[in-house]
Amino acid sequence: MAEDTIAAIATPVGSGGIGIIKISGTQALSIATALFRPFRQGRKFFPKSHQLYYGHIVNDEQILDEVLLAVMKAPHSYTGEDVIEIQAHAGTFLLKSILELVLKHGARLAHPGEFTKRAFLNGRIDLTQAEAVMDMICAKSTRSLDIAAAQLRGGIREDIEGIRHAMLSVLSAIEAGIDFPEDMGDDISSEQTIAQLNEAVSRIREMISRYRDGHVLKEGLKVLVIGRPNVGKSSLMNRLLGRDRVIVTPIPGTTRDLIEESLTIQGIPIILADSAGLHEGGDLAEQIGMEKTCQYIAEADLILFMLDASVLMTPQDWQIYEKIRDTQMIAVINKSDLANEIQRPEVPHPIVCISALYNKGIDVLKEQIAQICLGKTTEEHRAIPSLRHKLALERSLESALAAINGLQENIPFELISIDLQESLNALDEITGQTIGEDMLDQIFAKFCIGK
Image (cartoon, rainbow, N blue to C red; front, side):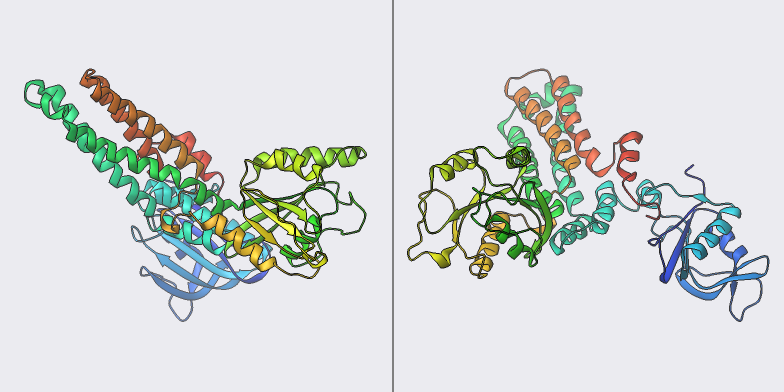
């Protein structure tokens, strides 16, 4: 299958100005020359690489469309193979007709992500860069786009290669100790060798710590608005969204289900959830809504704990607080316009006073949310957005720590070598130097067909 010439429509389905059919493989040029008639040239067509040609796609001398043909010859192309892009007018039936003609002349339909998979297999990019392509397509904010762009430039690969170089140095010394125990034994047992491995371990730990920030900026910060009935949760959600998404009435218990919406605050993707007011009793619908709220508490990255400015925290407020006191939280005191003196609770969490009704304090609250998210956030080029990367780093860390323990306890070098090799293998999984076909298929199956 790797020797097949593949083709697919690379632009979204629907009508538009431009639609692109992409072809990659050894037959890409011959298929193009069979279908393309250049404008004001003879029938023989010998395209040069990285040139754009104007002409027509023909089927048995019948013109299908007026197109531009982009030619990129191997190895200087996206996939590392000969690549042709037919830039036609974007119409669903028209693009399918051109694609069917390409397939008729010897190409096969590409699998999801197969163009990027070929770029990886042909050494054009590593696996972290391949994953970054999909992350760029699915980016939800400028910051998540920055993370993907940095990963595409090879930021994660550079970090992995630095750790890998240090660990290979230790492994080389260990293997030399196995082959020449009389000459190398004392050197391997020295504090310097252990310190070198400890430095690599420290860098692995630091990369693992960057997963939370990268994950939040990529997937979005889950923010839950919680409080007793009628403290203004739905009003706050509407203010943050900038539109009337949730029904607001003076009647307690209006919101009975968990409502999720997306927004962006200072480039951070936010998944905002308005919850049913927590209280005793209520009908069946309210009880189900409150159960969902309690389940969501464990999943939320940040809690907005809503309180009433005109009164001290009620026993009901304290009951809710006990459920969420160990979470990342902002105490949001609403209805500040109604209180002569705002009652601030004695809680060890940030406090923001607002009036959702009059849109006061909302910008301050947004700033506080951003500060909590970004206060310890890693620079975009250093973030670790993928759970796959985090799990591989954790496996590498575990094996490296086992190797350090072995050095300290003077266990046989052969066993230490196994631990170090397992640690390196886990690192190599991240960049794709050692990875199974099943894992590759799983990664690229998430891509669209044209990418």
